[in-house]
Image (cartoon, rainbow, N blue to C red; front, side):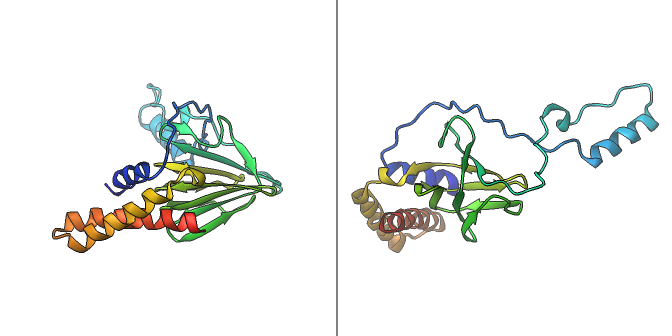
Length: 206
């Protein structure tokens, strides 16, 4: 519910130009695991005359092996439910800073594998002296051992598309709703609105 509510509130405070989903990026997965191999061996012992069923790992391409040296760039896949935000292909950049629930997390090439939940805040993509900033409502980031970062957001918008007057109005409205809420549901919805618009306001002032 929080993700849906956050996305709806974010859409009301920005000018969004929706694009059809056009990314061709494929996020490969790991190779067949030891558990798959063990399953196959056990199957052949019990039912040797019938071929074992295929597991999910048979239908996905393996991710490239972790390089022996740290690359100079990190590959970023930044996607939304309806579009690939950065590009239709993987983008190689110097660094990406994501708004994790544990705090702002800078990701450089060679970063330790990590899964991070995202909170409303700024995603910064750094390439040389150029920095591109997006406001995210929520989502997850998957940092892989081969210097690939997959950022999946429920909703996102370039910071320069945010309308300050709408942010201020939304923050005022939801603050009033929070103070007058009488049920737990009303309080929760109002708090989400306050959190989203406070993060939007911080993005504008930062």
